[in-house]
Image (cartoon, rainbow, N blue to C red; front, top):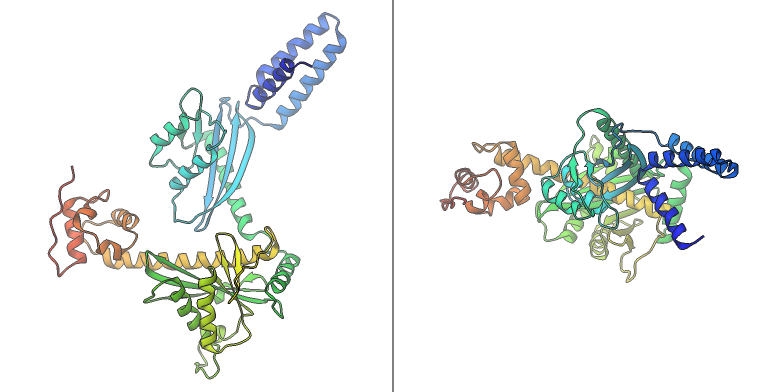
Length: 443
């Protein structure tokens, strides 16, 4: 076979996978009939086998869009910490491929904001987008994103759309369900396997040099917004499973940094374990707190571990092992250790510690957002002309009420949906004892 003949076969295969199936069925059928008329029966049999193979493939690839369209469809399901994506690659009305992945969310992003980052990740390499892309929600920079996607094609524009009804909406629902199941699987993977949990706790015991398996683990995480609204969480895993009835939230009035916050929270938790601490018999929270963990985990690296170790020494409580899990490289840090403990990627032990840390992070974020919303409702809810949508715009722009208090009327008026007059009202409400400087009208 020559290079040209081989290249022709490769090009045909690529074209077929891209959706040109009808042309190939017609072409093979024509060649089979011509060979039969010319009594080239061996060639006719070869074409017959090719035709049967094509039909067998097409039977397995059902038509999902009767319009014979080429499109990519993205289903997205997300929570506070992660987002699962399902991409259906439809060519010639048939699903030619499916891509699925999960991304971590560092920020509280909406579905529309996630769509923006997902599309940039999906088409940042050699993947050429089709003319139509169906997404669950349209991002605000739809026009700019369509222009960027158009540059990925040799010719033609790219159109971003949502599916409201019909076949496309039904296919989008399937993709969303797949994404929802993938996210659930990602969160609970291996957690129900008793053998896997037992192996994970044994591996953690060996890696940290513990005398016993960590049957009860407590993890602490700190969450704040630009140094304000500082809160912390404590989550509990027993036998490798969450004990949500024993989760605890902490509010930190003042703190210099994350290490100080960790020291405060661990100190408050260990106070329930000190001998001689007076407790009420009816105090159920104290009873649950009084049960000591085998392993105490903090979210962070060596500085956070050192702060927690200092709280342990000051409390006088003994028999509790301590470690920290640094998120960047998933390293495990021990007190007074110059080098981290590295667990194998994909190991049951690392997965359990990651799940424990992520659960603490999730719980802290929920508490922080709840307090932030309560602060917003109490501080901003009484300002005339400031409805829920404008409150959301102000929070998104400034991050917190404390940051908003530091803003001048001109900066407040620059927020979308807030004009100079309303900016003056907001500033006056947040600074009742100060005279507001006039906000310049926007041009």
